[in-house]
Image (cartoon, rainbow, N blue to C red; front, top):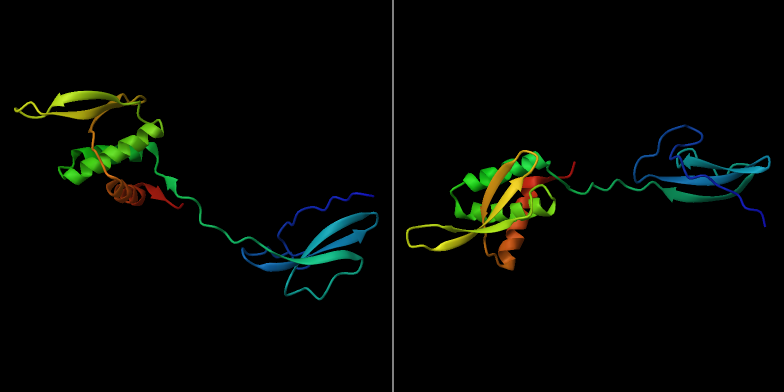
Length: 168
């Protein structure tokens, strides 16, 4: 038994030299040329049946372009967003800042957190905060630890995705 190598489609019409569009259907044929086999692709407009010397033919479709996966914002944008959230007096922004800081630790933009207890008022109530550092710039961030339930986490993740991710 003899083996032949048939090359992949170049997604261009053999006859008109037009490039096929995403999602477009076209015809492919394997044609004997001397002792070798060659693949030829044809748009639907020029297809009038298989060419002479064709060994086989079939229809194909160019894959449609899928929108790309969302890409995270660059590190400097993430850090600027964290800083803005920490400066915002709105308490819901503190929760968003906490979730963003966890993302930054996971992406290794900020160093691993070390927990620090701080006195928050005269009544000696203590709250837990994370002391994080961005090593390249030697910037420190102090982020209050927030205890979130699953519903809050899902809502905050949705807000973060809208803020920080794009499809380009």
